[in-house]
Length: 168
Image (cartoon, rainbow, N blue to C red; front, side):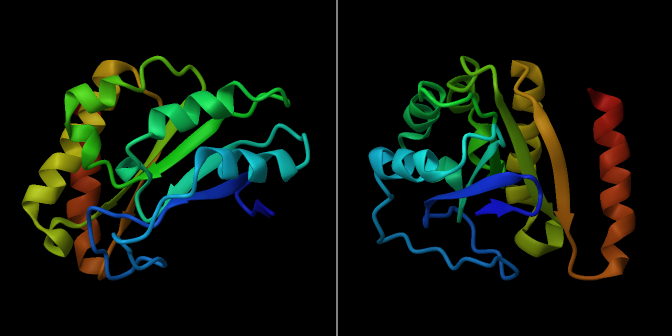
């Protein structure tokens, strides 16, 4: 079913490289990712309404064949669908990895951040490097969202948003 945000959500993996306490999905690193054929069959079952598909999961970038999945979705015969990838951005800090996505014209990224106290400054540094790689590679970022443990963390996040906005 179409998600309330105007897109179809497609769970592409149960794997994750973080363990966020607030996450709705507990990572399962022993599970097998659904096959590309299975995921395409799900998309084929949706109405041909052109709504985007959001690739979600615990962390979509942990799928080793994520570029192949995007290619397969883009080559479907149905009406073209834009693709959004909901990610924590950590793997995008690897420039060579992020560069794999430059061939796709209709992919947007949604990066979910947490206050650095939540998972530490090392994770945050990688997330910010991932965002910078997206900007440098011209990978469209649809939005960046924050999860806070308390309202006391909002000032830090707002300062970070302004600082990042001034640096690009």
